[in-house]
Amino acid sequence: MALGTQLIFALIAAAIALYYSGRSKTLIDSIDKAIFGSYGCIPAPNIEELTLQYFKTRGRAESIRMILQDNNIPYSEVNFSGDEWMEIKKIGIETGTFTFGQVPAITTKSGFSLVQSMGM
Picture 1 (tube, rainbow, N blue to C red):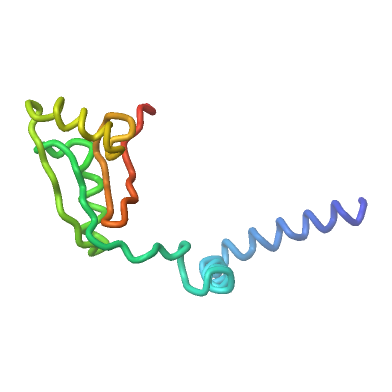
Picture 2 (picture 1 turned 120 degrees about the vertical axis):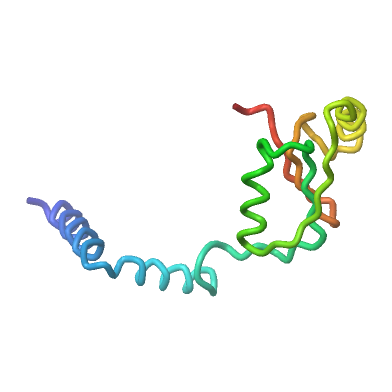
């Protein structure tokens, strides 16, 4: 076998052994800390005055609410009824709040927004 092939097999064997030893999480955490300066993902900037906009029902925004509450992220909600939606949608598209004319939408005081797209 060529040296390159042996090296690949050795790396695969080492990765499998590391995984089954239960120490892979320790290695991954160490790599995260070396790259990002802390454990986990790239740290999010401080989010101030987060607002979630959706209908008065739970629907698609419920999972967002659960994530925000689970991570102790303070937020406020703007809920509207189906009767109000057409006027709010028109204003939201004009102002850029609802880029695709859909909700849920999350906005911050600085003007950053995440919105529902037309993707399925």
